[in-house]
Length: 215
Image (cartoon, helix red, strand yellow):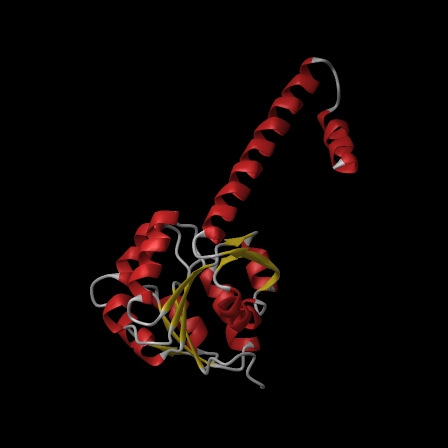
């Protein structure tokens, strides 16, 4: 298989609900060697069957040119950043791509610490469902310089169909947070509309159909 980017070895940390299928798509499509870490032996076993090498966090960082993180919260990202993790073992030229939704302040703090060592931190929070992760049709909002975005986009497109360059570091997180805000407000508005429709004898299914047609 032809390699999709300049990165020969991909590290991946966090093989959960979203991370597992994302990593699987990188294994199948990137053409690069993949080294992974997760606390779940079951998650590791599934990828070992595809030829993926399992290692510690420290070894993943040491052996990789680019490292993807996929965690449910910012505290998990901090746990692998500190201690015997990313900051301790990062080297000049490496790239770390955070696929989770995290705080803008933490994102820029981590980016500054890596920049001081000649490495790069990219915020690239994902959106959509586990099925989309399996199908490789996620939406990804990226905060990175234009040059860095261009270098990592081919890898991101292994698991995403909508990849947006949102601006500098932190802008991916800002965009994802605002995306979530609009989504939550839309869901609340639809719930209120359905309640009003029921009170006045209008079929909620008809209302939702009209909303879909006019959206």
